[in-house]
Image (tube, rainbow, N blue to C red; front, side, top):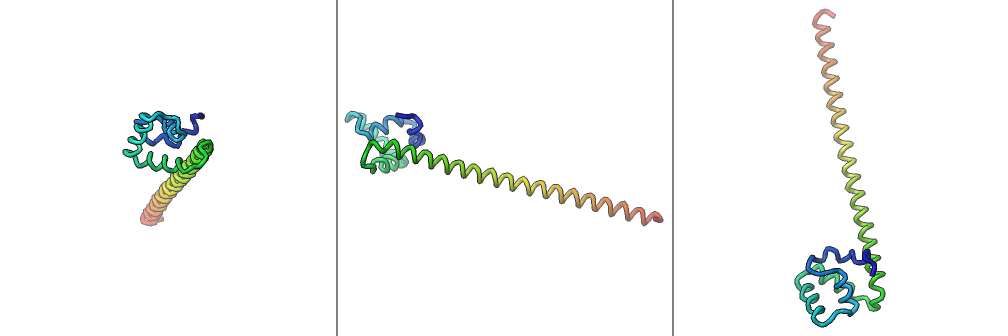
Length: 124
């Protein structure tokens, strides 16, 4: 099985191998191995939900296709979130630059006013 297809369950827990979960769904495990997987599923809500969702697929041959599609959708959403985060960061940087420019403009205007006032005061 393609390792990329197993990414959907990569956060399911460190106590179980993703290949073992896929073998469980395909009915390839012995009774003892099934019991072990079911015990771990009982301890992890995420794993239980993932297995329940994948278990709903009628044709077990389609699991790979579904897992692949979920992974692509997940990666797409992660990319969208990353793009939004970068856009927000750029917007924040723009505000910082605008604030710096405004402060510099105020300092320069104040300095010019002081110089002009002193020039007028000294007889200009």
